[in-house]
Amino acid sequence: MKTLGTTALVLLLPLCLIAQIQYHDIHPDTLLTAQRGTIAEYDLDMDEDGTVDFYFKHFNLDVDWNHLEAYTNYGQPGEVRVLASRTPVPLQHMEEISSSGQWVCTASGSSSSALFMEARWCGAGDRYMGLRFRRNGDWHYGWIRINAAADTTGMVIKDFAWETQANSAILAGDGGTTDLEELHGPHTISMVQQGRYISIKAGDGGRLHTVVYDLLGVQRLERSGFERITMDLSALPHGIYILRMKTGAGVHVRRIVL
Image 1 (cartoon, rainbow, N blue to C red):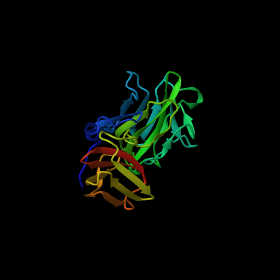
Image 2: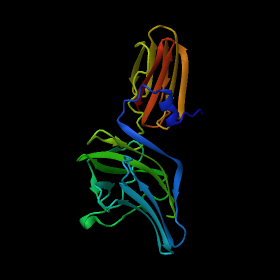
Image 3: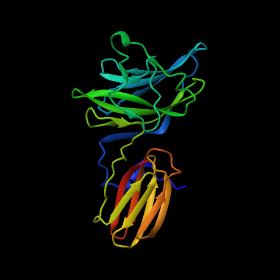
Image 4: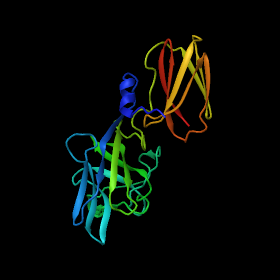
């Protein structure tokens, strides 16, 4: 299966990004694991303004103290989306992050304790932590993707993103490629979606080439034909996908939601 990384997708489609999301790929992925008797820490500056907003720690101080924890930075108006137990919510891909739910700041008042990332996080694979921080007095919502080891011996921090539009929700894992529009060329392509079926027609009657990418830039389906193509997407998991349609008159890009 062909792969087109998120960065490559942006380079290929430089004029079509209209999303307000700032995405940051942590490359290579950061493995946060402390040696016995030490603490490993990762500092997160969401908007890259030089001030740490959140930080994550792996404590490995002794046999009975081996924990994964999340914090908001002291003096910074940041909060973490949590469960009633004050455990960060382990969000799955495409879950909404907004003002709803319970949010806490670990660095103020009675909420000064750390947020422990065990049980629902460890061994669960990639999960997203909902974060929010203030800029110019308004909340901005974001996420960070973490894969925590089943035995609490560490975690891998992979990427993060935040919504630049104040007080607007973001989807966990949304890297800013979910609101793509026409790249160039006249409006010569029409598209109709009925459930998990897509019908695409080239207005000029010429050759039509269509590729479906997921949000990680992985090519999931590809079809070519003349004038009209029908695509069955029922085998794809639910989520948001990028549909790139090309004719002799131009290239068009649309997002689709399954």
